[in-house]
Image (tube, rainbow, N blue to C red; front, side):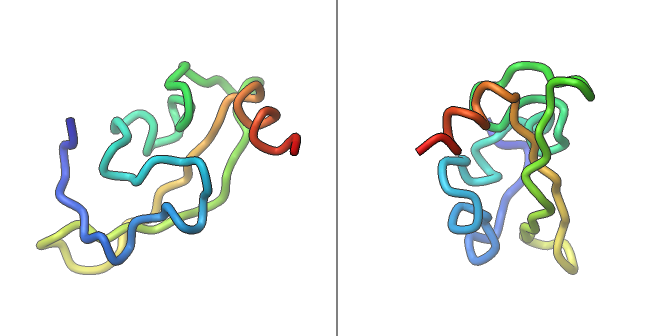
Amino acid sequence: MSDMTFDPRYLPATSLPGVADAERLTRRQRDGGDCVHCGVTLGPETAVGLGAQVYKVVGVAGLTEWRPRACRTCHTRRTDT
């Protein structure tokens, strides 16, 4: 369940194929603590950064940046094509 309301004009789905819209992720997934694909808890040695993304929270001025991360297993599966 979402803990924020997002403006769909800024959801990152088009810039990160295979990653759910930010509104469908948990706070830990948006904060980079858990894999955006499988939800496993990440550590410095197991995480792969997916780059900075932005979203718009309805009713809040400006854009919010988030830095999603994936586990090495999910990242490998999605990049080996």
